[in-house]
Image (cartoon, rainbow, N blue to C red):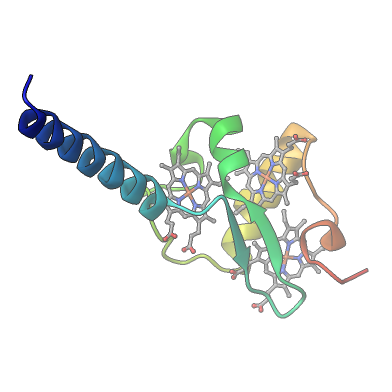
Length: 100
Ligand code: HEC
Ligand code: HEC
Ligand code: HEC
């Protein structure tokens, strides 16, 4: 293998790694801060993805921003599942930080 060929290969590899890195990063953050007047909610997205596997549980219309994410949706979907599974926060202050 010539030195020139090796350099070209390395460029391809690093371009590939770079793209993978960008893709993973653009996909979704590990945690989201969902804003609410009652106290913001720290939502561990990655933990839910790994734990639930099924994206549809929250992303009815496919991954990405959730249209209509509001109090009604969240209390039904988020708190609803926690109540059903008897796991995860159900009390106001467990989701809404800094509130009793
Ligand atoms: C327990 C609920 C839940 C599950 C399960 C879930 N997500 Fe999400 N996801 C959310 C919420 C809430 C947001 C924030 C939506 C918003 O801000 O409109 C979000 C946002 C996203 C975003 C947008 C990120 C951004 O920064 O714009 C992507 C992409 C995404 N989710 C992909 C997935 C994929 C893929 C899965 C399945 C492996 C998944 N989600 C599972 C609740 C969930
Ligand atoms: C389909 C079921 C399901 C849905 C939907 C769901 N969760 Fe959960 N969530 C869980 C379970 C199960 C746990 C408990 C995980 C554990 O104990 O390790 C949990 C734990 C949590 C925790 C505590 C995390 C920790 O590290 O202790 C928070 C905060 C949370 N959920 C917020 C939310 C919010 C906000 C939403 C809606 C955007 C949501 N969840 C939607 C199942 C769900
Ligand atoms: C499982 C987590 C969870 C629990 C438990 C929970 N909430 Fe929420 N709440 C949310 C989320 C998520 C939102 C929507 C945030 C958004 O719109 O981005 C929200 C929205 C709200 C809003 C609307 C805030 C605004 O700025 O529009 C109020 C008020 C509220 N919750 C009160 C309560 C009260 C009172 C309780 C207890 C009875 C409670 N919540 C329990 C997660 C939770």
